[in-house]
View 1 (cartoon, rainbow, N blue to C red):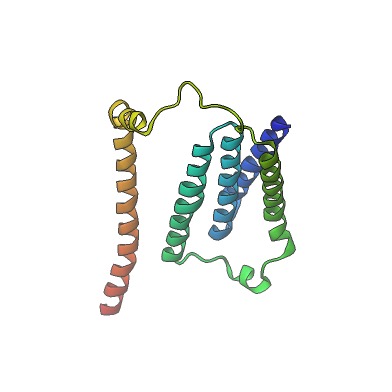
View 2: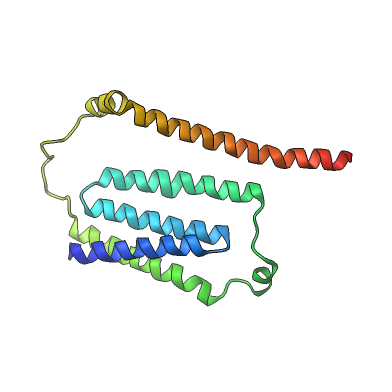
Length: 174
C-alpha cells in the first residue's frame, strides 16, 4: 500500500511541478508549486522523516510561497486582458482539483497507515546539541553558502523594487 501511495505522490509532484512551469499566470504557477511542495512533504513523511516533512510545509509551502506572492504583487504582474474578460473556467480548476484530491486521499491513507508509528528511536538519533554542532562545524561552509544566496536574493529584491521607484521619480520630472 505504501508503495502505491509513494508512486501516486510522485506523479502528483511531477505533474504539479510541470503545471507550475508551464502556466502563464504567475499566481496559478504558485498554486501548482504549493501543490507540489505538499506532495513532497507527504513523500518525506511516508519515508519516515516527519521533521523534514514539517519543514517542507512550513518553509517552502508557507514562507517561500508568501515571498513569491509578495514579489508578484510588488512587480504588478497581471495576466492578459482576455483572461480577465472570460474569467476562471471549469477547465482551469480541473487540474488543481484533481491534484488536490489525490493529495487529500493520500494524506488520509497515510494517517491510517502511519509508517512511523510504534517504532523506537533509531540508533542514529541526534540530540539538538549534536545537530547544531554538526551543522555549524562540519557543514559550516554549506550554511555560509546558503546565507550568501539569501543575501543576494534580498539585494536583488531590493534592487527590483527600487528601480520602479526611480522610474516614477525621473519620469515625472522629465
